[in-house]
Amino acid sequence: MSENYSDLPNIDECTRLEALGVRAAESKDYSSALEKFSEAIEKCPGNPSPYNNRAQTYRLMEKITEALADLDKAIEISKGRGKSACQAYTQRALVRRLQGKDDEAKEDYEKASNLGSSFAKMQLVTMNPYAAMCNKMLHDVIGKLQRDEAIDLPLNFFTEPLDPCRVLGRFSLPAISSKFHEVKTSIQESEVPEKIHAWAKDEAAPKISEGWESLKNFVNAEVAPKVKKVYNAAVEGPNYD
Image 1 (cartoon, rainbow, N blue to C red):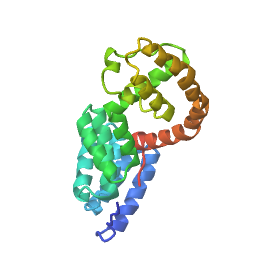
Image 2: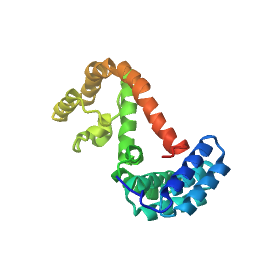
Image 3: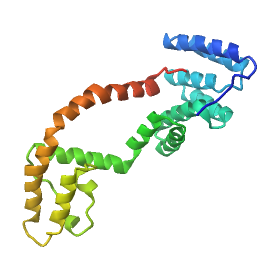
Image 4: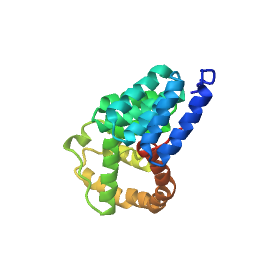
């Protein structure tokens, strides 16, 4: 994802002005930031970086039309390649999601992901309806197991090919998979649903509960802070390079 604009005329002055704009934006002096970024663009219009930074400032000021124009320009100048294009696609995807244009946002996230953005990859996962459905099912089933409630199964559960996602989301414990296949072969028995619930209560629930607290502690201590940091940097900014 390398890019090199060091040979452009006035690039050093452009970089200096950008740095001043970054400091102004970090101090929430957005008017001064816009002024410095605009000067940087005037000095070196072939550099996409100040367009990205000015777009981010416009976003913080809720000037969406101006932000999109700068992001389009950054993508045009960078020819959709390199770090600047990656940042521009990510920013534009964020704006399009806020506008309710999820299909266009997904296209931009895919392009940013291909350019190496881990944030874009994470957003693509959250936008996947099948993944969202599976995660919801997993959450619901685990909740029922913890509350010792019966697990409701659709009428066609025993007549269609087993889809583990419909049962326990994307949970792939070997014990769960093998037991469900075992029960599947016993569909002629009238007590099959009761067997499933008994197994879920007596075997699956304890296995899940064993690591439940440690998993929550790990997520809260290790995962959540990193996700929050990435999200804040990408959405709330400013995150100028």
